[in-house]
View 1 (cartoon, rainbow, N blue to C red):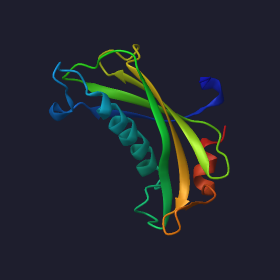
View 2 (cartoon, helix red, strand yellow):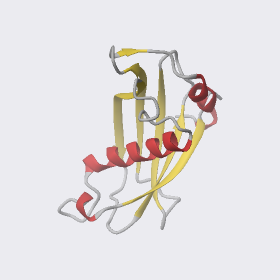
View 3 (cartoon, one colour):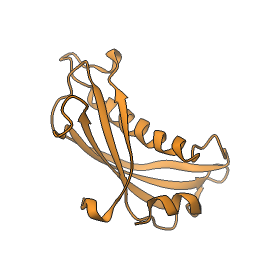
View 4 (cartoon, rainbow, N blue to C red):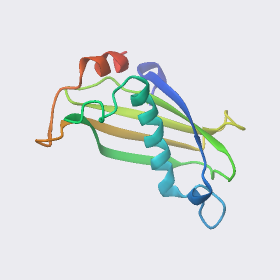
Length: 138
């Protein structure tokens, strides 16, 4: 990921919940994906792109992956930086960096997610809305 080629769309604070811990007191690996999703939807909320605004179309997650770099210990507030790559016709890729508010210089995880804009009734991809395209085109 070359940050110079990406649009930073949001930095979101996501508090670590007690229920998100594993047996070692670390953030459970599966929960990282929920935190990245929460940050993406904070971005969507900010620009009224949440699917409930137009329940006929919206994003679906097509692919995601995560690099776990360092355990996240309870208690803490995570800080998720979300970047977006230039969109295609109906899809775009997001890039995520997780730090914690008490140690914002240390990367705890990085991740990517490929989002596809779809018509929920047909299940088929459709062009990304112009307002979203403008937000993420660099």
